[in-house]
Length: 391
Image (cartoon, rainbow, N blue to C red; front, side, top):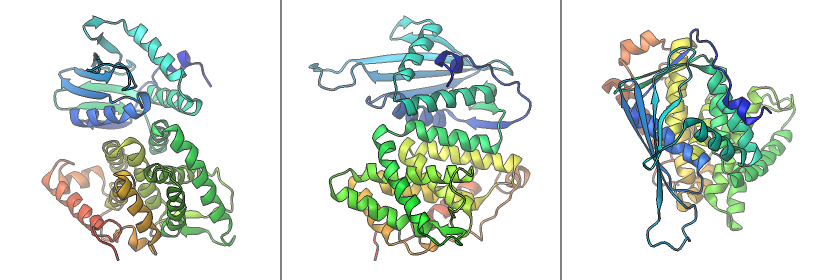
């Protein structure tokens, strides 16, 4: 592994052509607050974002002490503010006008402090975070800021996007969830190893019930059902990511949903991101991947979008509360076929190019597009798995 200073000093890759991602202030703020689960897991930190011409202003507020048992009637807070400027090709953005309270702070000093904080994290998280930072730095193309949006250009392909989203999952997983996920990973591998060797594929609807049964059993012994469910989803995502890279045994069958491996990956990866890093970040990543496909690969897919929405809904049921987490374990054990897990997606329009998508829906803020997404959400919510009552 490179030393921390090497990771932070990596030069950006010269920009040719790549992915263009436009994020509003609200989307940036959602991603920022989701990241606090990584950097400040023990604090109730809040971030606010404002966009202006050629600048992005960020304000952070966090308790001075991680523990509430410090003896103060009023908990003191520390406030941090800084500005990021637009950055052109070969010019990686840096922080400007950094302040802690009313005190100006040199950027190099703040960078040194950030490196020390990361270096003090658990080894798995530290290694992943440095790798993620290095990937983002090398892939960076440019940053254009306006009052309406931040437009980032990245020199990446879809495989890199998948890798980045996986790293985002890993760095936001609490250590206890990561440890418990090993149990579900072993349970999954044991189940797959006992299948006939001629089986080339297995349905996601077949895999989920025994894993949910294991989570229910562990929850009955006093473990948090939300933690168990998060670990379950993360373990499944871990398996799917690594199996797509051919790092599992050659006898391990593919996990598919409606006979498609990619649909199973969309459901589980979205569920894992939503459970570990929050729904807003899962939605941003989902939208980014579909935008990339529309512009550069197989086209925009409403089938993939449906699978993403199923995954996010699954995560909400799995972790929203202790009661919903227990309900998740009960309902998932009752799944008998893929139809119990996802609406029929064959009627969805797939393979739309960017031009075809814009001709039908203008953009992702249009009434037509929102109406289509709302229709998908209603179909998903109508499944017995997510409805208010189950038989």
